[in-house]
Amino acid sequence: MTDTATPQPVHTEKPVPPRPGRGAVAARLAEILRVDHAGEMAAVHIYRGQQAVLGAAKGHERTAAQLAEMERHEAVHLARFDALLTEKRVRPTLLAPLWRAAAFTLGAGTALIGDKAAHACTEAVETVIEQHYAGQIEELKDRDPELAAELTKFRDDELAHRDQAIEEGAKDAPGYPLLAAVIRAGCRVAIKVSEKL
Image (cartoon, rainbow, N blue to C red; front, side, top):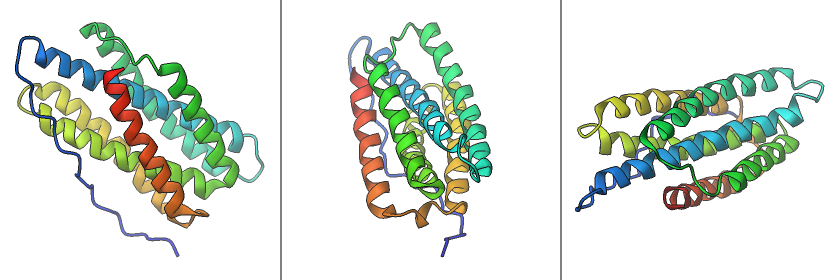
C-alpha cells in the first residue's frame, strides 16, 4: 500500500560554520557552487538514463513523461549553476565525467527494475538534496540572501519531485529500503567529495 501522506521536509544537515581567515568566505562559496553544480548535473543524467530505458518501453509513457518534466526542472537549475560558476570564477568538480556516467548508469539501472524503482531513485536522491539545500540556505540566509533565495526555489522543486515520486509508489519498489539506503549513501559521499575536488 502506498503512503499518500505528504512527508514533511527533513533537516538533518547542519550548516557549515564560517571559517576564519582571508579568502575563507570565497572558498566556502566555491565549495557550495561546485557541489550544487555537480548535483544538478548528476540529476539531469539520472533522468536521462531513466528515460533511455522507459522512454523506449511500451506501457511506460506516463512515467517517461514525468521523468522528462523533472529533467527539465533540473536543467534549469544546472544552467543557473553554469552561469554562477562562470560569474564567480569557480571551477566545476574534477569528477564531472565520473558523476555523469555514474548518474546515467544509476538512472538506467533503476529504470530497468521498473517504474517504481525509478521513482524510488528520485525519492532517495531528492531526500538527500533537500537536506543538503536546507543546510546551505541556513548558512547563506544572512551572508548571501539572494543566493539563499535561489536555493530555496530549487529546494522547493526537489521537494515536489520527491513528493511526486512517493505518490507514484517509490516506497513500493522491490527492495526499497536497501535501494534507497544505498542511493542516499552514494549521494552523501558524492556531495562531500565534490565540494573539495
